[in-house]
Image 1 (tube, rainbow, N blue to C red):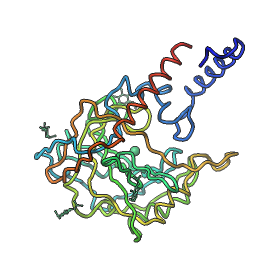
Image 2 (cartoon, rainbow, N blue to C red):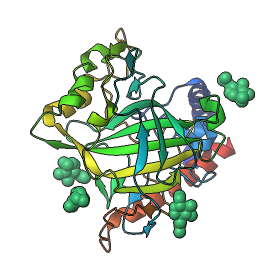
Image 3 (cartoon, rainbow, N blue to C red):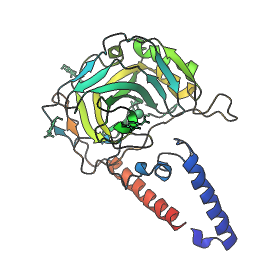
Image 4 (tube, rainbow, N blue to C red):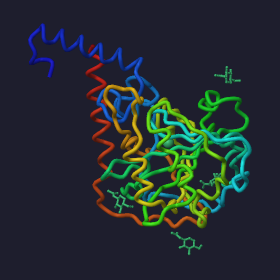
Length: 325
Ligand SMILES: *[C@@H]1O[C@H](CO)[C@@H](O)[C@H](O)[C@H]1NC(C)=O
Ligand SMILES: *[C@@H]1O[C@H](CO)[C@@H](O)[C@H](O)[C@H]1NC(C)=O
Ligand SMILES: *[C@@H]1O[C@H](CO)[C@@H](O)[C@H](O)[C@H]1NC(C)=O
Ligand SMILES: *[C@@H]1O[C@H](CO)[C@@H](O)[C@H](O)[C@H]1NC(C)=O
Ligand SMILES: [Zn+2]
C-alpha cells in the first residue's frame, strides 16, 4: 500500500503511524477502536501477541475434549458465609469489578493448590449482540462472569502472573430468562452508581454461593490459558462451568446500556459494550471435561474454526508492516 503514495505522503503516513504507535504505548487498551482493540493489544503489550505466546484465552469449547475422571467438584471455602466488612464495586473502564475481600478460597477439582478469591467481573455484548468470552460450539452466551483467585503461596498478583498456574479463574456463562435473579440483582441494582469509568460504590457482602448455579457445579471444563485482558499473562488455570447463571433481560440491559467506558465529565460519552476478547486456537493444549460434565456434541464442518487463522494472518501482515518502520 505504501508503494502507491508519493514521497511526502509516505513521510506523513509514517509520521502518523509513529504518533499512533507512541500513543499506543502510553495508552490504555480498549475494545472499540482499531488502534487499541484486542487485535492491537500486542503492539503495546507484547505478551498479548498471539504468535509469540501460544496459550491464549478465551477459546471455543467443542467436542475436542478429554474426559478426566479425577476432576470432581471444586471446594468453595467461605462461599456460603456472609463476609465481614464491605465489598467494592468499580467501573475500571473495561469492566465492572466486585472486589470481595479476603475471606474466600477455592481448591480441589485438580487445582494445584489453594487459591484466594480476589474479585469477580463481567464481560457482555451490545444491545443486539452476545458477549461471553468463551464460546460453546461457536455459540456465544449473552454474558460471562469471571471469579479470579490467586494461588496462596504468592504475595501479590504480579508474582502470580509469573507462575503458569498462579491464578485460577472460574468462568460462568450467563444466559437470559424472564425472571429476575435476586442475588444477581444485588450487583446489577448498584450499576447506576458506577456508570462511569473510575466510579466505585460499596456493596453489602452476601453469600457468594447464592450467585452461582444451584446444581450441576461438578460439570465443568478445564484448560491452561491466559488473562483475557492485557498483559494477557499465561498464568491462568481456567474452569468453565457448563450450566449457566440465569438473569433477566432487564438485568442484562443494565450492563449493555448503562455502563460507560468514559469518565463522567468526558466530552464524548461512550457506552462500554462488547468487552470480550476474540477466541484463540487451542494449539497443542488439552481441554479436559470433568467427571460429571456432559461432553459437547460436535458439529461437523462448522465455519467458525477458520476465523482465528484469518486473524493470525492479519496480525502477521500488520506485524511486518510495523517492522519496516
Ligand atoms: C487429570 O487431572 C489431574 C488433576 O488435574 C491431573 O493430575 C492428570 O494429569 C489429568 N489426567 C489426564 C489424563 O489429563
Ligand atoms: C445469543 O444468546 C441467546 C440467548 O441465550 C441465544 O438464543 C442466541 O443463540 C445467542 N446468539 C449467538 C449468535 O450465539
Ligand atoms: C510482589 O512480590 C514479589 C516477590 O516477593 C516482590 O519481589 C515484588 O516486589 C512484589 N511486587 C509488588 C508490586 O508488591
Ligand atoms: C444437572 O444435573 C442433573 C442431575 O445430575 C441432570 O439430570 C441434569 O441433566 C443436569 N443438567 C444439565 C444442564 O446438564
Ligand atoms: Zn474476565
